[in-house]
Length: 480
Image (cartoon, rainbow, N blue to C red; front, side):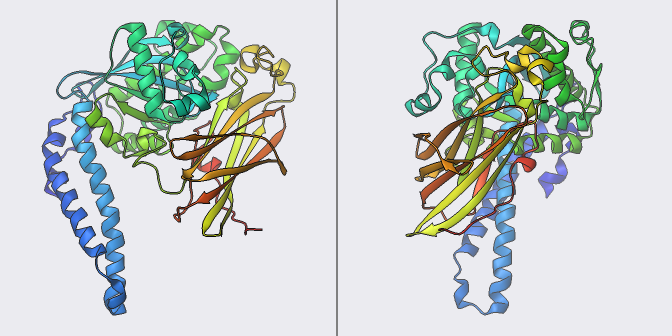
């Protein structure tokens, strides 16, 4: 409590002069000591056999265990944040991070194609966005940056060949290491880490900062037919749809995208935002996996890897019965803005001592019926990649829990062939769908040999929809 009361929370958000990080650094040992004390107390209470106790004693003990476990988790997070934040925000030396601005209109497993890039500098808590460029400008890498054999088998060597494809894999640690290596080869600079953000996360931040005006003359000129003010309500449509209708050249689209992000980061750095609103916005973006972080420092990354902010598909951040459903665009265009999806557990039962769980993925193309002519060719792809204009092709990748098997994939009631592979100890199934305007289809991924007994949890690629709208409540059926 003394450590908590010693912190002036308004100083822990960005401002023109940066952040005063010393109070947080000073509080870190006390928070760590508290986390340790609560953790050990929780372990001692967990060791008590409640079956041997009277109900009047066992009931409050069970309640105390639950509350102490929750407190322990929150204190662990606070201790890790207090330990990491000062260093990562440049308390000792300026830190430079590669910022991947993911475009959900062309889906990739972690969100969208990272078309626009920038370097985010953190110096004593002061944030600055610079060195803006595009993935296209970096070209191709021959030979490709090496990734592990499992991921290369599933996602091909394209992950290490093109910056646009570094996040075909849902494992953000792989994405970040590969992107960092590409930047170093292309720019000759080794950065301290990688951060990703998408337009929906930016909308959360704009809800906290309030409207942001486009002030850069060059960006104003490029977006002269777009809103001169970005808000939480218009930024997603502006960046993922209107930009392509109003700006013809892909290079200029990337410049506008990066310029808009710079204005929003500038508003955050100005320090005029209510600290709690800003922290809530960032937390919401992280919870929906729209904000992902990786550190090149092994000690820092080992802590980040314990949280969903790491975007990893294995390790401490993964819940026991976690399923993953990820989307990779196969159209070569920007049609995913029009796709609406839902993901739901539709069967959860036990047979011969093992669980069987089916996950249904429903996709609908809401593009106008005349999309082939009414939407720009850059959005539809114009049929150049073998997909009819207006139609959307998506590679749907489903992950089961550790040690599980993928048994079948059922499309609209009929079993279909699929690619069955493994990523580490997790089973992986891939199936490709095509949707014409107005069309809808469902895939059911049936996983078996599941040894985990925990509640199923679903992780999905962040899209233009809120994650809570995509993941539906479980509708479990009995085993046949």
